Length: 196
Length: 196
DNA sequence: AACGATACGGAACGCTGTTCCGTTTTGGCA
DNA sequence: TGCCAAAACGGAACAGCGTTCCGTATCGTT
Image (cartoon, rainbow over all chains, first blue to last red; front, side):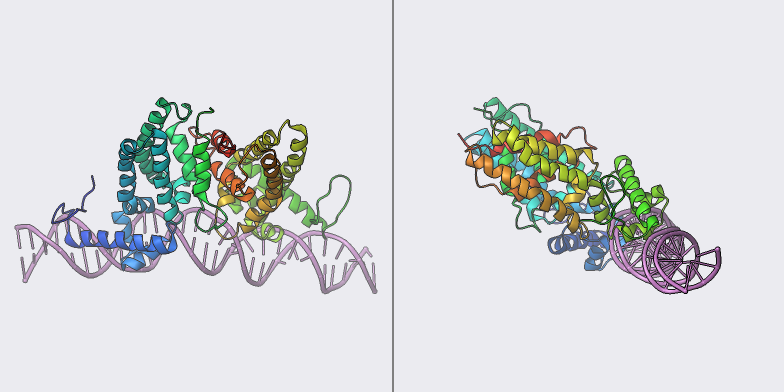
């Protein structure tokens, strides 16, 4: 879907050699900075870490959100793919749903501040918001439907709403030892169960 | 506990007349701006609305968080007071807990962006965070304990954690018609119930 | 080797919250 | 009443953010 980038071998020349090299460097630098300083790290820090000017960063990634997307794209896709797989390997749809949500929560909690920036209503993060939603909501819907059909959970829950709720619960999960987002999400999922 | 301020009549002179007048004007202006533009409105907007300089705002309220606290103090206190009252008038502790949480959620959802800024880990909002916690966590603990003793809910839930979770769920509740924070909180509270 | 297209670096812009200080207002005291 | 230090005011200035813009350097093709 994107230019540049390839699994192995030689492929997909965007345009110029140095441009491709810089994009890769930028992605590595961003990933490194995100780990140490969180996703809210200043763009300048990433540019510095990559040894690159600000202009370069903004040519490759029109907004900071696009950079974040690029860095985590693979992991989001992996999460999306895991959904149907869990549905087949799990004993019940509800178990699959639970495990999949855990996957999602682990992902969010692991990246400092990702959940925060994800729910931020500041303009400019629309694309980030949208990417996560486009990729994951369909999967969640599938899991939710399966569990509803099996009669395990209430059937009046919207996948978008649930994902948003789970995402919200993950905000500030790091940087506060007293708050365990996983437990709260567990509670939320427990609340999903059909009343008897 | 504060200077200025009084219920009725003449009282509690902070120091100078104009100072007290400006503080009141500022509180009114802030409340008005918060309603129209949300709690994240720029300090300058509030200063302009009050017809006051930036210095004045920062003398009365050392940080923006302090201004927010001052504006909503009464309502937070009212919420805190409502806890014990509900415990007496409700049929069961669990019902009281549910109603009290509803009160809290209504409060958060009503003020645009309050929940967001409340969970923000940006330095400078520590005082805001702390005020809400100091005031409401004890109340929530009381309700939680009562419900746990009555055997209605799990007893391994911490009040701080629950409040934080509820607060998180309220983020972005306005500005997104597809997301109903109240319903998610309802789910969370349902998940609290003792299994079987 | 030369040259047009492409990409680069970083100064500059507009927006935040906050600080600082010269100026104005106030209210007790001669 | 008039004076004047103390208190409060206003807003320019600072630091830090994301983003834009453009002169300059590099690339790869002719």
